[in-house]
Length: 118
Image 1 (cartoon, one colour):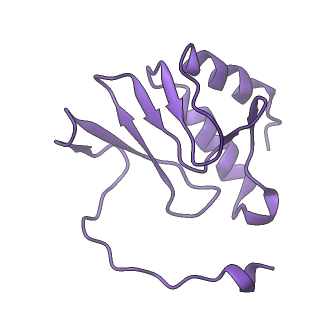
Image 2 (cartoon, one colour):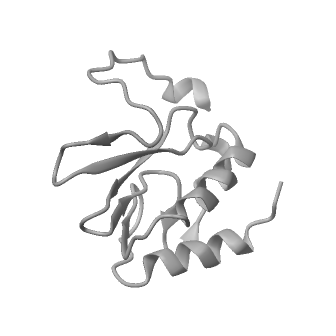
């Protein structure tokens, strides 16, 4: 099925690295979170205590992993989720599902603890 969803790479406008801070929207931090895809990243808005998690997790009747059929490396996926728990955020938004608007970090920490270490 992956061959049906094959995409072509696009040029990068601004290369970024893990922990880079950019002067956008009051300051954002790049968090490298591979697993779902090799170059995945989350964006942390420290002043707003907001985390944009993209496809690292989904929020549908609770936190969930993305489809394993579309996950490049499950071990790295789990490590990336645990990495996010170190950040101070109150709200988290996802590529799939509703945001968590209260106690988001606590919910991610609890989810990370339930995941099987691989």
